[in-house]
Length: 263
Image 1 (tube, one colour):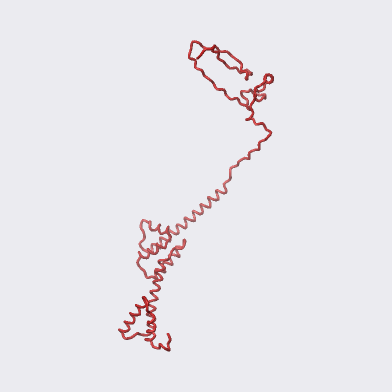
Image 2 (image 1 turned 120 degrees about the horizontal axis):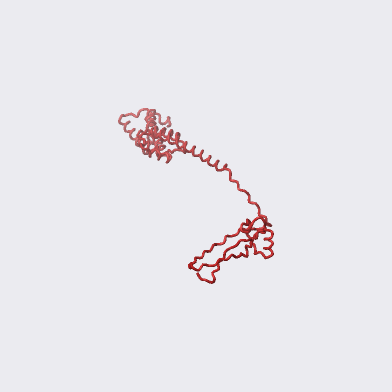
């Protein structure tokens, strides 16, 4: 204010009121002017300024505090920081209703933490109890995460340090070696048979020390046993001993001679 032009308190107050033309300021100016006219005095300019500060500064602080309560959210796992900021804003807002404060506080909590408190058997109905529960549950959650991380590291270490079973390296097959499985023994010639009999050799592998029916190199396949039912008990077949052409080592088999009879 230009003190050379507005050199009295009334002029300075009137000049200031001339700018208060919108919303709350306009209503406050109208009320102040009406009271001054009624009292027939405006008072000093210093008192006028103090009245402005008391009214509008307090309203501004409360308005900002309410905005802070509505937008304040828990930052990550910092529950203590969130509680401290909420307490300051709640004090500046002038709110004392616990249900309103709890509504603002719970909305700013992490969803998991808020759900944990709301699902308790007895949900706290005072804001201070909410502060305590939120801090306690957050500490428990942090402890659980540390233990889970420790178990995960131990499991990873065990998996990486477990000795692998020894698997022997297969030996390379000799290309010049005889493939026993693929070899089939042909029928002996009379000369070969005679030689094996004289020297006591196996008819299969041509080696000494065992007979062909117990040959370890070329084991014999058991022959199937065929059983024929005889329906006529009066006419029994004659039995005769014959020599097997392929088993001349003395192994005899019994052949049935049925004399052209049908059974």
